[in-house]
Length: 496
Image (cartoon, rainbow, N blue to C red; front, side):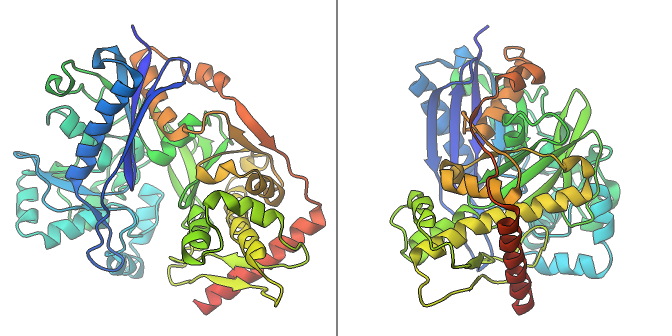
């Protein structure tokens, strides 16, 4: 059997399809952007048909780029933007409303009410999550309450809900499969992550009919096969995981204590805690990292809202940079005597603070502060925020003490930033040879499920570091920098 695997990576701003061969090399790639919809401030939507159309287009283009036929593909793996909610008519396959994206904040008042009436304790106990608009449950509830006839149709079983993976699987299989995997289910605020099943108490809390929900399966499983009308043959789908979990798999973080952090627009850090669910005392998330052969592996997760977006702000907002990749060279030329701190709370502060009303601030400016110092402060803000996440994880779970961080995402191309990250963390930072870790993780799940790629031990043995960044900063200098950062955060929260 051929060992080619097609990974579908459906993200927030674009859809991609990548063909990997059995040595994990990219043989074909295609990417298509799609429109973002902003009906009101704080509201973010996608047309679900755009997600499907661009995935289908990129699948065909990636096969052509690789010079392969659909019959050459052993399996398909899917990874996707998490928490985004879609409801559609089972009979027609048409969405009843635009997809409500994970970034959307329209249900903030509902989440505040859940906290006020004490419901957040139940949510956290069952799901490992916090009562926040980020997750899917209040999005589903909003659609059922605000789209005419939606609740009535849902209660009689005429509607289907899905995160993006479920929506794509429905269309790929010609409407024959209404399924999701455990990682995506764990982000809905409806899944009991101890049992791996939908939670009846939470369904009652959010008034969501059980009949609209998909079946929950392992991350490696039989998710059906593509309708032969799409590609001329039926291609099996054997792997599914949400994007951050897929990146964890792609970084081969299979052992407890291993940690990955993805630096894109924001930053998402996941720490593998093994088969033990670790409750957080520091407002991190407990989530499912993956579920294979019926065994759940858990993770602690911390989310930083602003990472690469701070560099975009330097380029597009301030005009300091012409290109994002200039940020490291600017930072390297900064005056080391100037202690400038950027707290990039442009959309509030994420974990471990969860301060939605905080707003960004620059501290320590002098008459001599210039573009170099501000660029350094922007890059260092990502390093400091990662240190805060790691400290919280270590407080929650002692086994995190000797963590080596594996990194991916656009920011990791900057050697200066990665060295600074290692210095601030006082821990090694490993940048992999293969940077397409999210798509690779989905591909491995599918390839393993199809029996053409090795198991976790064989895959982990193939992981290679492009470079290890070892901490080189003096302890006193590190502690002085961290002390200044913490003062800046506290001032920002106080002002918020």
